[in-house]
Amino acid sequence: MLEIEKQEYMNLKFENFVDTLEGEDLLDKTVRLDEVLSSGIMTGNEALGMVTMNKVQPESDIREKDGQIHHVIMLGSNSYLNLSTHPQVMEGARKALEQFGYGMGAVSNYAGITDIHKELEGRIANFYGAEDSIVFPSGYGANVGIVSSICGKNDVIINDAANHASIFDGCVLSGAEIKVYPHRDMKGLERILSRLPEEKTGRLIITDGVFSMDGDMAPLDKIVELAEKYNCRIMVDDAHGVGIVGPTGRGTAEHFGVMDKIDLHVGMLSKGPGGLGGYCAASKKVIQYLRLYARSYFFSTALPASVAGGLNEVFKLLETDNAGRKQLWENTEYLKQKLSEQGFDIGHSQSAVVPVMIYSEPVLFEIYEKLRRRGVYVNIVTYPAVRRKECRLRLCTMKDLTFDQIDRAVAIISELGKEYGIIK
Ligand SMILES: Cc1ncc(COP(=O)(O)O)c(C=O)c1O
Image 1: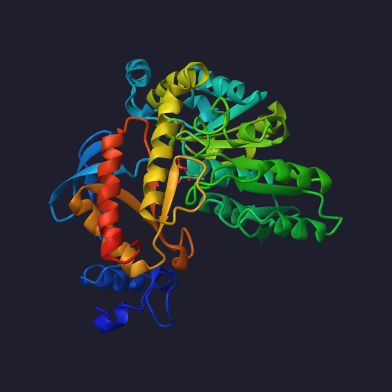
Image 2: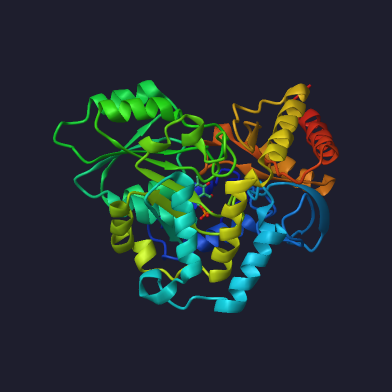
C-alpha cells in the first residue's frame, strides 16, 4: 500500500489520479484513489454505487452504498418528459422485444438492424426535415464517431467551452486543430474565425444546443451568421433540447428559426426521449459517409430492437401531442420561480435543466449527502464537467412532478441553503 497522510488527501483532486507518477507501477494510481475513497474524507464520490429502486418517477427510493434507503423527490433524471415509462412507449418496446429478442448480435452495417431501426431513422429525419438520419447505440459514441469521422488532420473545429465531453473526445480523436471560444461568447467566436488561415477550408463549428450543465441555449442565430460569413459548417448537439425547446419541441435550432441552416443535427435518445442512443440527421450523402466512416457505428453492435421500438412511439408522441411538453414547462417555470424567490443563483436556464450555484466544493459535497437524507435527489456538478469554482447542484424537472413535490423539494434545498449561508 502506498503511504499517504490523511491530511494530504484533502489536496488530492480528480486530476491527481490521471497520470502515473514517476517511479509508479501503472496501476498504483488505482491504489492511491482507493485510499482516498475509503479514508472517510468527502470527495463527492460517496454516492457512487447507490441504486435507484424504482423506474423513473417523481418520487423514488434510493439505496445508498451502506444499505440505507432514502425516499426522495427525484430532481436528477434526464427523462424530462417521463417517456421512459409511458405506456405506449413501453408497449412499443415490448412488441419489439418479443419479435427480435433482447440483443441484436451484430453491428448495424452487418445485419444488426431491423425495419424497426429503419423506421426510427426515418422518423428522426422527418422530425428535422432532413433527408436521412443514422442512429448510434450510444449518445457518447455518436458524438465521438461523428466528429472524428467528419473531421481530420487538415480541418479545424471551433467549440463552445461548455460543449459536452464526448464532443471534445471526438475532436481529439479526429486529429483536427481544436479551437475553443468562451461559453456563448460570439465576439470570442468571431475572433477565432477571423484569424483562421485561408487554406484551412474544412471548418466545423460545434455547439451544444441546450448546454447540459447550465441549461442555457447556444445563440444559434448568431452562430449561423458567423458560419456563413466565414464558410463554416455547423454541428449542434441538442441532447437536452430535443422534445423540450422550440415552438414544436424540435429543439434549439427551431427556437432560433434556423433548422435548415444546421449541417449536422445531433441529439441523444437518452434524455427527453427517455431511451438510449444518439443520432445525426443530415443530408443523404453525409449520413451515407457516417455509416462507413464513423467507427463507433461501424464497429459497435446495434441498439436493441426493444429500445428502437420504444423510441418509434416516442417520436409519434413528439410529432403529434408534444408528449406533455406544456406540463414540463409549467413545472420548470414554477421550480425556477420558487428557487429565485428564495434567493438562489440559478444562472440563465432556458430548459428543463436548472443549476443552483454553490461555488464551494466542500459545501457542495455535504449538501449533496444531506439532501438525500432529507428527501431530495439532485445531481452535483464539479470538475471535470465544469470549473471547480463554478460547482453547483444540477436540478432537472420532469413532466410528472406536482407543484406540491416541487414546493417540498425547494423547502428542503432552502433549509440547507440557509444552514450553509448560500441564501439568507
Ligand atoms: C450534451 C450531451 N451530449 C452527449 C451526451 C451523451 O449521451 P449519452 O448519455 O446518451 O451517452 C450527453 C449526456 O450526458 C450530453 O449531455
